[in-house]
Image (cartoon, rainbow, N blue to C red; front, side, top):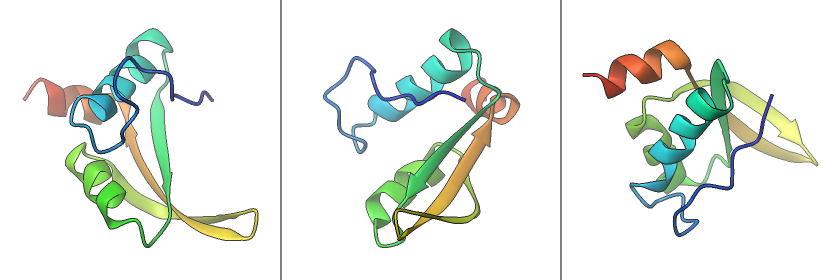
Length: 84
């Protein structure tokens, strides 16, 4: 497992360049098979970004007393979406 946050961009999850770059970095540079996003249920903009990137809702989890939605995409799905 790896956390991907350091990507060359303006550090905005809503930036259309940042999230795809983070996915690419996770799958190619880090060799990860799956990427997840933990998103607060009320964070509609981040949910839309995750869905645009092909991530799907996998469930929810509790961390530090807070609920987070788990969105995920695997390498094969990401590559097929990128290659059209």
